[in-house]
Figure 1 (cartoon, rainbow, N blue to C red):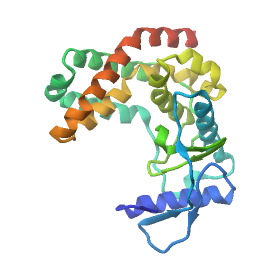
Figure 2: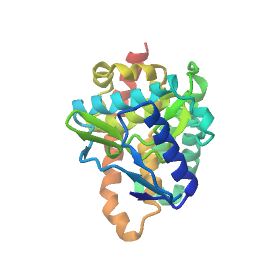
Figure 3: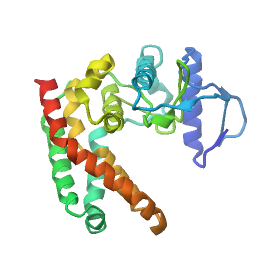
Figure 4: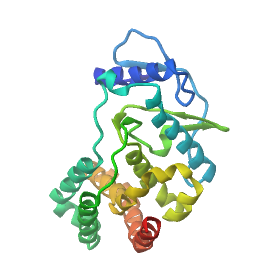
Length: 260
């Protein structure tokens, strides 16, 4: 059971599940009818979160996301009127602007790495704008591909928490999945692309991986924490920045090879 303060979001999530139930989509957890506008009830699923370090968990999660994207063959998601359009470039531009707006605070956190991150983020956004990519047919996007929204039980996989679901290009969601998974596999992009055929839909957008999205997101989240929480989070921020900068040059080379 989940309570939503925003009744619209609750209704959106219920609508998504009902549409998926109509086509017997097996990779979500069915909801139970209730009259409470703000409450979502679902059947209990005894499983565990995906571990993106493990190949089989990567495969299961991608399989479920691919099947979700393919539901546009059976469901006209535009008709619901409840799903906003996902615009990746605009979202990342706003995130970058917020990052720059908090320069003083973030310089204290990141020191010399702050300027390096700003430079790479700016260049990546510019590259996304300059380099053309083909338009895709719009479909439903889960909206939050973090590992704990993929529940596993043996070879059974369920996607949960459709709160951020939207309509957009499937390749954008795959870019976000890659951002989540790459730190777990030492940024071995070529191996990931070799292991998972579905990742090929993001081939034209691999340069989007040069944007330090996860770092900017975590740093902006850090600013909202209490002083005590910041102390606990500080080592994590330092580690993800260090790992990203450590692998940045090798990642760029892999992207160049894959797109040549």
